[in-house]
Image (cartoon, rainbow, N blue to C red; front, side, top):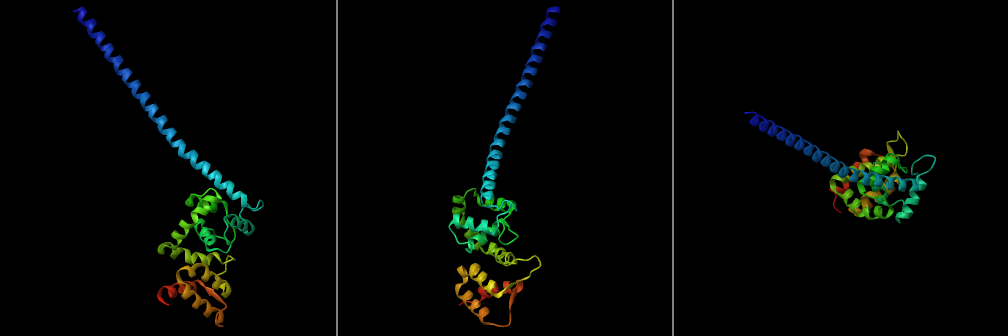
Length: 217
């Protein structure tokens, strides 16, 4: 009877050790899995931070040191490196993509927003992103947002609600001529020769787009 009791105790002890070992193995596996998961998470985080670092470096290549913004002079330099005129519609599209609020100025936050969306952290990548940006803007749903943005972007003062006729003509030619060349030419000709209006407001600006969509020439 005593021998049987000893055997039973020995078996229980062995079973207990097995359970402990099994638990330890599970913990090790769990730790290993967590470490692997953390490593996997670190890789994209590092890649993203490096991308932002390159985007920021590109920004400060053109930014004014005192204002920490890319000002009109910086934009002209940027355009020369992009090999496009500063009056090119693609620069206006770029401002739209960045969500720029003030004409002729790019802030760091705006720059980051646009460059990350375009996946561009260098001049060469930004050049390559232009065709896709043009396609994006000219989609009907996006153009409905871009067109009024172009008007607001040209309001150089905070409380200003209108743009002068010459500016309106230039802007019409810039944003609509690719899609509605005949209609735009007719509109510009009318605006230049009429004497009733000196400025154009947003309602009139939106009316020009309706005119182009409805009138077939």
